[in-house]
Length: 185
Image 1 (cartoon, rainbow, N blue to C red):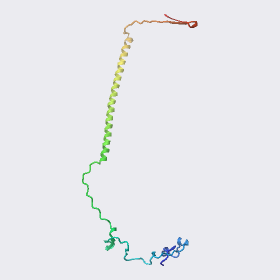
Image 2 (cartoon, rainbow, N blue to C red):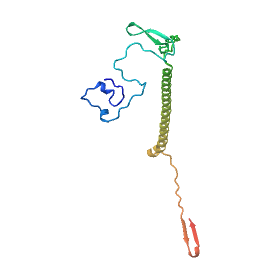
Image 3 (cartoon, one colour):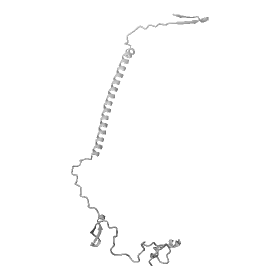
């Protein structure tokens, strides 16, 4: 069965049995006649040489194909010639990558700053320690001065000095009409 008209199930009619029914057969679409010059499904497979009518635009080159026979191919479809190998750059590469050098230098700089800061704090600690020592010396001097004043009086060897007591009495009296009198004796 070779369909010469294109319609619902035209292509599937060749490949199905009578018991099978397709969705296209159930739709009840009218059969359409193929326009003149349109290809139809051939009854036998096509084999043999293929004629290129208007598609040949360049020279044909024969290349080995499968099975060892030579096959004609248009030259424009052949792969381009491989590019020549570029000469290698033989300049020696640095032993350590430049980015790694910068990272290492940054780490060493940070370590140096940390060590210097530590040394600065050690020096500041020594200054604070020295000031603490001066504070303790000042405290011992104050203790010595107080002891030199208190010790003779406590031991009874203090210098005698005359103590004069002076008493001042102030008497203020107020009278009528805002008169005030003050007596100092």
